[in-house]
Length: 103
Image (cartoon, helix red, strand yellow):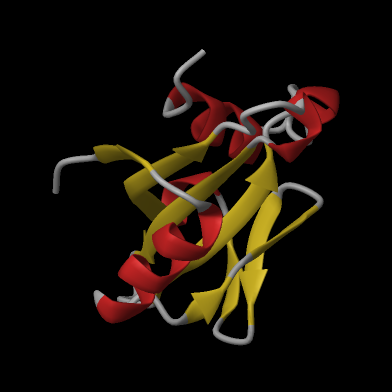
């Protein structure tokens, strides 16, 4: 799978990914992505879509929407503020997410 980068509103990115079957809501917990489907380490998922949203006037409005597919076939979303990941840079999950960021 190739990673695609799009610039749109967060809502548009979420809507487009939901239409593509990314229905899980992933969250960051410790060094894992979690959802009702389970807990996934950095080797347990792929990032297949990345949408960046840049606030026109306020950097606090910046966010990244990740389309994620687990190795068990669960597809879902993770939405982060662009500065939310910097405080946990030692986490292997965060390193994987940041490797797909535009920075």
